[in-house]
Length: 547
Figure 1 (cartoon, rainbow, N blue to C red):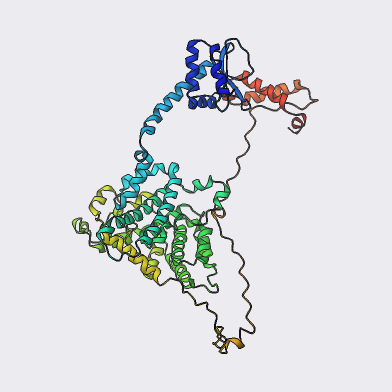
Figure 2: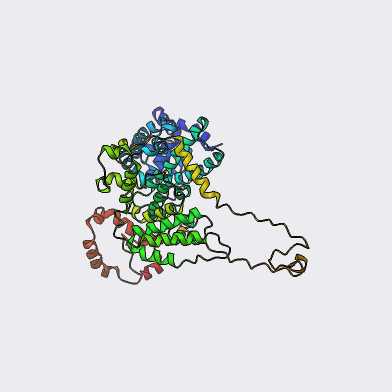
């Protein structure tokens, strides 16, 4: 006979009203688990008695710690289990019902209409229309949702790669491709929004709470994903995000700058290193010294020129440091004046000093359509990164008043410009496929000696070069120091005196200690005496001697 059947067959031991209460608890497993978790029961108790009336006389419902009902004991029947009193049952049941009442509205809302879903959907579909006021409404959620923001960055990055692959044959904006092009444009902006939300506050605290095993799996910085997409704005915001983590990603960025085969990654991690040096003056000398000391000469490396050029751009960005606080704002103001936007003439902006800071600072990072497609634009990204890294998160967005005035409608050509830029950027960087067909016996030898193959390498083939030693890839665990272990808390109950020492001699000292203790520690003298007596009985003699 199972426990449930046995319990139901023993309900004849209680009165009719108590049967109703017993069946109500039996059919409400979440309430029973809630009561057992908050009733202060001993940790080692495998079964618990829930009193339906009197603490000593019962009747009782016997349940396991997992909430499974075992049996029912009538009034006066004895047991040896810890008891949940009737007043505890009533109070906890009332609290549980109040909690359920708070959760019930959200449980009745469909998944697509829940708060978090609406927030993510709004950020995904906002495009360039997310104002500073909306961003400040979302910013306080960062400590709760930073894992969601970082996950969305990775998901959107992957989505953009797949979308560009699907649109690779689209050479002009056709009506049938309008929805796909609009979705591509919105996802580019969403990548910027989620990166800005993840950088609110002190995001490194999120990683400091993770176990070391999780940190060792992070081998790319959080800001590298936005920099893959050849946008000046996304690359700048990605560098800004990496700078918000301080020194955490510096080892990772240095490794990829030295070893990566992708020019886009080299350019982006160079901007990230420049951003860290610009946002944290105490790290500037160390970052620049490490950048100068990187070994960029590796055999068979086709990306050395890109690395050397990016390193020169980073070092040139710090030839002057007195303008770091205004460099990005001046660039944004100049770009806005050069754009010929109707708002420029309408507000009478003739010089960079006429443009408000609330407009100039966001203008430096809201130009998603400014493509990093040539050497000058790449140098511009690295030059602006140290200054953009000093902006506050809300400085990346226009206030609602200016957003309405400066908003530009989307057109399919905006997305087509992104696709054309990426195609041109990666077209001349495709690896050359070598013909690995072995030469004929009478063909010239491939080693370049000028003699026939049968008299050269066919007779004495050259030994293969020794394999390169594996290079360790730094992880986030190298940039985040482990948190120091908290100091052990002092015992609230003093240990018992060692055996062989007269306890009467310790009475005055104990009285003095009690007199100096905080008042909160002496609120319940009976409980303290009981705990001390239990500790004295349980502590072994050798532990007393060590104390």
